Image 1 (cartoon, chains in turn purple, red):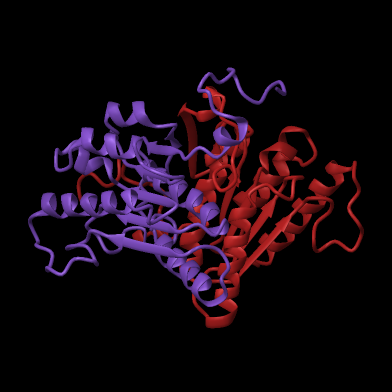
Image 2 (tube, rainbow over the protein chains, first blue to last red; image 1 turned 90 degrees about the horizontal axis):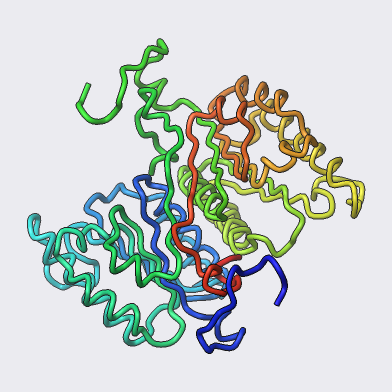
Length: 204
Length: 204
């Protein structure tokens, strides 16, 4: 084995090829918005591989990350038109999910979040996508709207070669424990510290 | 002023609108590749605003970040075809820059890097782009191939409303000092620690 590439010799019984292509569970946590940005950057690479990308945003605001949403929708259209890259689905909770027949309620975010997870679980079990971005997914876990143990079970047992990328602050310990890659973005210096407010094209 | 938005009252003499739209110098540093990923995620938002995006990669390998490159080139083509988003230029040093008439040399990376910076400086002075991603730009600074003081002067004095995003390890202190936003991505847990090698669609 070449020196300097890996820090321990694996003892998982996998071949190098199996290990190289092992599906990853990635958690981007920490206090800054960079965690979602990094997750979408990873999804860009998956798109270029021709993989099916499924984004599920557990957020309420329509404005939130609309830049990334528009860019990914455009990439999905590139795929439909030319075959380049992979297909893209982008769903956000907002006031109810886009696949849901019932109108979203203003107040029952817990039920909306649980419905979102139920759909993601179905998709994982049927291998609907190759890359899942579960954006801000740690919040419904934290608030008890979705059962952490169930999530970890489904993710650990997921079939095939599906990569799952989860973002949000305060990722639960069981999720961190199950993850292959955990990244934390920390602020060294931020313009809001100097009285700057968020601006278009930068913060969203 | 609403509570909880900014931590100090600005004393820069700018109006709220001027401050909101102040062009930013952003540095993504730290040891993980997430820093470039985050930079490209920011550029996605700029693209959605219709801004001209200029990416300059100070790297040698053609394979490096090809996923992001292909995705941004596709977005640039979307703009040309439909007018959605903004135009995209993506240049990488490789063996000489694409705009250069002379063939790149195999060995004189220092000259290539200096030529890259000279072109970026010209573009900044003529306001050629609205967003610049100078990817892995800290390395030629660290190695003395490009003068840090000159870079900081050009960036601090740049005209108009040009956002500049710089990535790479070991950003020089003068650059950190000049930056409005400095982000550092830290690894909490990485699959290479468990013997995993890089894989397509994830690492590139």
